[in-house]
Image (cartoon, rainbow, N blue to C red; front, side, top):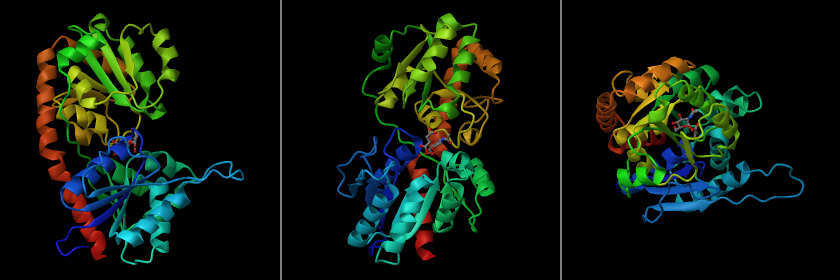
Length: 377
Ligand code: GMT
């Protein structure tokens, strides 16, 4: 740590279009702005990480593909890179975003590094608990890595409760909610809607990696049950291939309603062009996409799962329904299609809530406090 209390922080995360990598990137950029030295570790540059700030550094991790290995190993090269940089740069903290394999690599790195003051903070993001934490091939290794993290945080109360049921780590977990900082839109709403072929229809919006936990099948089913179908469009910003859902779109006769974009950047342009978010996940620790919508004044409809009720307030900044109740979701879409003023009111309420609770200025100091706590241990 420097005399001025600025830290040297390593961040290990996934580089893909996934909430944990997005949050880690945003956090790193904010920490750099606040005068800390931030070193990113990943196998590719995280998609939303904008390098260029003198305090931001990226250390790519190369994986060797030996013939003997049926599955290339990433954990060890990641640990080696973290240890090398920790020694060279005198890192204070390694912040592992998503336990597998980042927390394990951080622990190995700490044991290898010559500097004994290195502290590990691990943030659980969701499926590292809810999916991998229940997998007997992973659970003991995750638990061990969390036990050897100095501080463990989760992105919602709900995920903390779930994680404490799954893992016995011998210390309390801390909740630090996610944050978002909206960038400026680069194209107007009118221009975007023209390009998407939308006039005055209500444009529903869904952004996710469209994997099975997101239950895109239920999203499409709810859409098919709407009476206002001719006046609706759905835009899916898919972080992964949408191919496996195309058959369902055809079966339900939704071809004319559903638009899919796999490279939806900047996301702000698409959200601003839309009217209402829609999320049907069976499990969601936070749902960063709902928060992104809130910052741009867009309300969402969702199933009441995981941390979603901590992000948006039912009936105020959006509407929540019991998981799986596609008819209730469809009824809400119909009601809101007929009452655009209510959609706008909920959007404004969400924006106020987002700007009160989930800004970088509200959340980043909480991580800084966690780092200082870890260093005092
Ligand atoms: O499920 C995803 O969308 C990706 C995953 C990740 O870790 O990259 O998202 C998880 O972390 C996000 C950021 O903290 C949360 O907003 C998501 O709710 C969470 N996803 C799940 O728990 C399914």
